[in-house]
Image 1 (cartoon, rainbow, N blue to C red):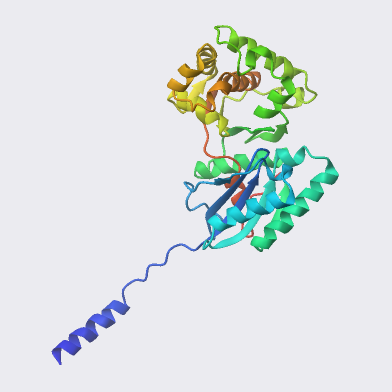
Image 2 (image 1 turned 30 degrees about the vertical axis):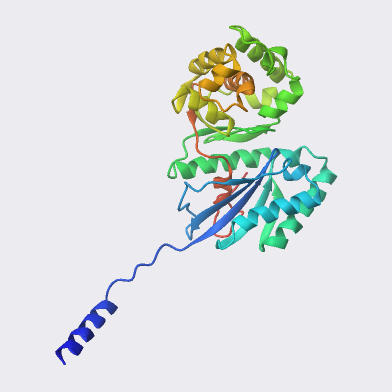
Length: 331
């Protein structure tokens, strides 16, 4: 009898123990339909539209190019591969956002390709939608992404370097974007001899490449609207192309002078020396151009210091008005 009573007391006491309920969340899936590839970015977002895990990584799907350049069969294969990896995930909504690759298409092809991407996505997940971001919207989303990474702080400026376009946004700045991305300028420029991958290393190569790239930038009709009057004290740099620069520097912050010195050293190094410094072999030949390009861009903006930013614009999209319950407007 005593044993039964004891078990009854323990049972009742157990019923009164506090019940742990984890914070409810849904997955906001952002698909980055970039100019050179497609990334699936699932983010766990709270009911208050706050990132619960900013360490979540996007994953890329192997393809011959970005969705804007793929045929219907290839688009379907990309979507199938991506959603297969997301099986079992509690996705609330999927938003496919096209960037520079879509913007460079003629308007009638933009609509045609966007409708194809949207209908293909719905085959694998509903609800979903597809849109083409303006460059200014992409800039604003990159700014929002850094707001998330900085725990809500908004007193920053971001510079995002993509393959097709470059974005600038920040507190007190009107978001802006120009078709001056890493690949776009290289295709536009040829590139200049000093910037070519097979050019022999030399002490003058960096400055010759930088000066040639600056002449190209200054010749573009959008130069004044993007660069004029810009003297940010510091910026958070976003985009995968920056990772190599900070890794070589062994630091997450650089002055323009430090970037210049590193660029001179890289452009005066052989491919094997660049690889020995830590650059993956497949990227080593383009390392001189990368440094020269980023220096040309940031010195024209007269930036005081460069800080390594986190991620890119997709985290900002995940907490924007694309998803219900989020009210961070994109301009």
